[in-house]
Length: 201
Image 1 (cartoon, rainbow, N blue to C red):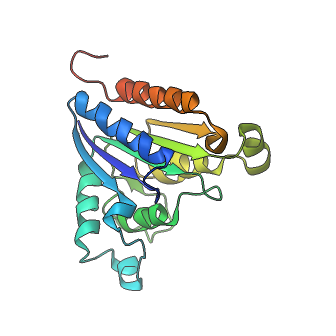
Image 2 (tube, rainbow, N blue to C red; image 1 turned 90 degrees about the horizontal axis):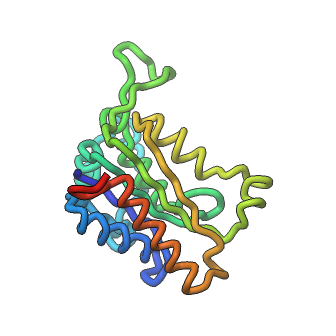
């Protein structure tokens, strides 16, 4: 499978980076074609200017590369921390610039843009790994898990991807080495389940 892997975290020694490396290593062992992108390392430009908003056109070669990859991706994996109940700004900008009409969705002919579009992304599965320093009980009671709504309903379902899985690792700030090792084992198991290699089920 051709799989797009997107990391959004600025600190190279973060647990998000450890997840990213585990994902890439597991996918490689399983024989997949990987389009790996560390957005901060790539210096992805997240700002959507007015003309691009209106017509979707851009000359930014990195944006064009990402758009082509996401359109043909058979699997999508997103890795990012929970910041204010949202993805980091660079990832929000990635969404704004990539998930455009004609790339990720399209309206029926004659629709003025107020209807419900058809999703264009054809990935068989989208997987999201998140990290948080908020306890699960408080997350649900106070905030209602906004990241689940963002990724499941506002992004992937809207863009045509119905098969979706998300895993939150918490609390990272107080986690032990053994806990993080167990979490990385869960990452590997998840990748092996959704993106198995030859001979795996």
